[in-house]
Image (cartoon, rainbow, N blue to C red):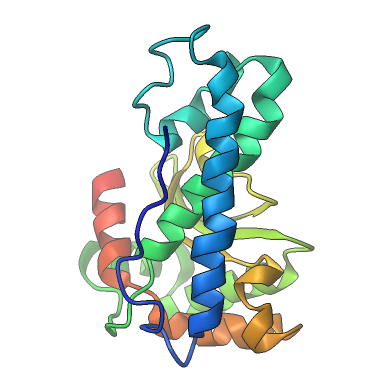
Length: 205
């Protein structure tokens, strides 16, 4: 059984950039629903594939989608992705100000020219992601790259390691920013937890 992780900070901790009501609904309703639906999808195949998914981290499950029975594969993919994506999203935000340093800073400079240029390219990708989805900084083949995915698709499914992500589904920002996705993206940079991003980069490297 997969479980909903607690937020690593209070619901109002990211104010004024991300509002309390959005954090509460996003975590307690949207993310919780992905967890419930994932468990519901896996329940009928538990005995059939005993041991294959029991205790498997959700990221590993996303790498084993070909082993999931076709009848429930799409439901598992969508909801496992929703669970994994949100679980990462909460951790790479923080009310504590930080900035890229060390090897992460060097890698951003190598891949994009500077952290500022990286933010510009990432923000453009987030703004241009049509419909619902996510934008990612990933480590792919040993190099940093920006990806965007529709719905709850995850770079994990194609062999990339997620370092940083931004949720651009409307439910992530609509209560505060309505249709102004650009304002949400700009505000979000104020709460990026670069310490956690750097930790993930070091681990992945």
